[in-house]
Length: 451
Ligand code: AVJ
Ligand code: FE
Image 1 (cartoon, rainbow, N blue to C red):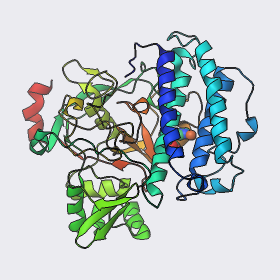
Image 2 (image 1 turned 90 degrees about the vertical axis):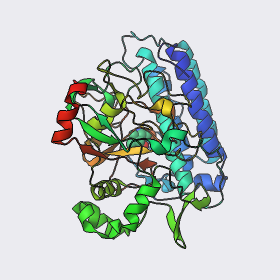
Image 3 (image 1 turned 60 degrees about the vertical axis):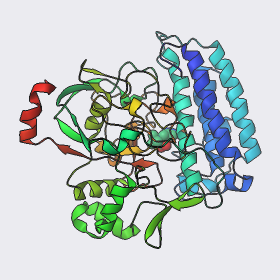
């Protein structure tokens, strides 16, 4: 695994090449017909994602970083995500599969020449190049589209084309973990001013006061979620916000996306196969409204984004915020379920080596976790290098998700990484965990060892 001390150019090349291997697999594993088809109005045709990856790389690495003339500037408007919503992209004059493959290969060849000649030293006067930032940004961009394309694969009907081993079984102690862990109160450092490839919305580092709270040790499982369904959770307005209740009725929600009944049991469709819903796996493909309603039904609430990040990064022994729950080392297979190594979450309680100081597990990887918070800028936020990455999304329309999922590459996942989506979205690889306030008596009792 690449570390922060490693040569930024070598780290950038490795990250770009890893993302491209995944892009190639995701686009070569389907027929040409499936590549150009729209599998859901929520998603682009896969062939759009492919050429969009190339076009963004041409814009930022070949033209901007390399100062080279454009390869296909005529494609800029076709692959501008803001000009055409996903549902309308099949009608665009898209490159065909062979043309798109040739295009991304040509862009990549030039990118590697630009990278080989670039000065990526951490103190480079141009912020875009310092520490290889723009190369890291494009590796993260491609990795994010690899996740989006994985969601398209999940929505696609027909026999399975992607295959991966199941995650390891839960460790022996998984069944005896405490239901919740205490995260001590006090200030902590949220966000970062030192992570070289952090994106603009993760900056700057700033102090946030967080009251002590209890957090689920592991994400909410399918078994727990089925209790909510069986208790009539979907038909009782008291658990839902007014908007959530309206949405449940309008959309006819009864269970997570991809679930259906098979007699008395729940089954789920997963990458082309139908299988029993595994009881001890974190629940997946629920929207924010469902997560919020479950939490209220359980007498709890979703954690705020600041609470989530404190649980994931704050080390009470030193007072410092770490890059990851386990420390500063880049994610390895022992820490977290990331990178599409497995095509499903690992059982709740997995990855003890990835636990946070509080004892919480699986904060990174497995499932994105919905938080209570709207997507807003940190104090001192400045859009960089373009407003359309985050700035235009700030506001009450989007909820923040944290922690990454099995479909997320490690390059696009860390304790500070912020994702966001509409509260109705379910095709993303999202689950959640719940929290509660520390009560007055618990607070008195815990004050001594938290100071
Ligand atoms: C950060 C996942 C919300 O997919 O809309 C991809 C990432 N930005 N291309 C998205 C992104 C530009 C973004 N999310
Ligand atoms: Fe994009």
